[in-house]
Image (tube, rainbow, N blue to C red; front, side):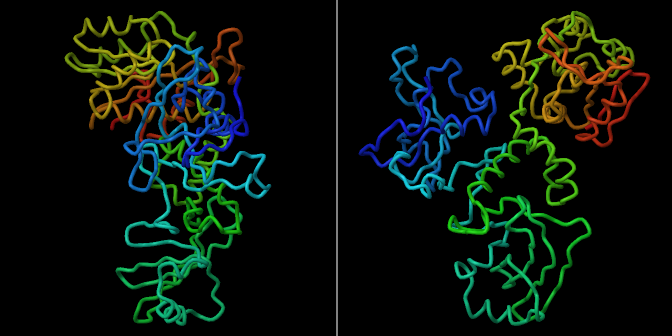
Length: 450
């Protein structure tokens, strides 16, 4: 039975980490939290949930953060394993070892801020030193903390050049160029991603450069980095949770556009909401949608020399049958099927290793997007294809399953879902990742050229 954090007592060792609680795991990973964080799926590790753990030095980075994996001995006699593999996805940092019943209400509600937040590529997201967000030579901080980095006389000197009545709460300090920007972010305390309004950049010589708020404003991310844990304007812990939520979908969004509030509101927020509801993985596995047939466009692509002899093709969501693979083999084409619901984990790992990072001449996605309910998972498949195909290679997408009078629905009794897309509706999804994608009628599919 899973126990809560309160079920352990203070121990003599001064731990800095603990396993996350069940509530924390479920909040971050939904119903599929075990698979997402690498936790034992049979329940053998459940006795560790919420308990302290001593992280060995070799698994820590220079700032004490967990950067590698390590093993802990298994003390659960009902589980056959001798050790458990542990990494940062399972852990959170703590301040002390007091169980909840010994803490005040204020202490119970406080969480230690320096948690392991990383991008999809593994880069840590953390404050610059004690406070601030560093981007190149620019350091962003809340005005409450200017004395942490800026000489008081220098600050007041440049501030004295501001027009009378200017409002600001964010400071951008460039130590190299000796400039300070005084920026107004009117919703800094209330918005998850506050806007950048009017700003005044002051040089050491006293030159004033004003930048007005854009018609579609720019926004800040990770606002908790601008302040310390003691900041009272918003809940810093919740702001960190917000960072973790949107970083979880960062692999399917255009990171070069996230500074625009328009792109953020229209393209990113819906994906974050989907994640918050615990739908970041497929609700319906699509395993039973595999059909024993060669997909319609396959022979057409061969006839038009789109798939050429000697080439390597990655077939995402290709199902459990090998008819297409065998047909392409007869044409001298090597076809690799990647399907998390119809092929083994070992098979998919092997395929991913030899097809990722521009190793594939082409990629096919046939009758796949239409059987996935969640948009974020559709986009992840498209991003996988983008990563796999070589420069100048092509991605071929086919999802044409339109039944007149029927919309998107669960297919009862089959653990599957049907969007009822025609090719034009499929194109609308594809263009969220590949704006230049086109329907090529003679090929009966959508084509993307990388």
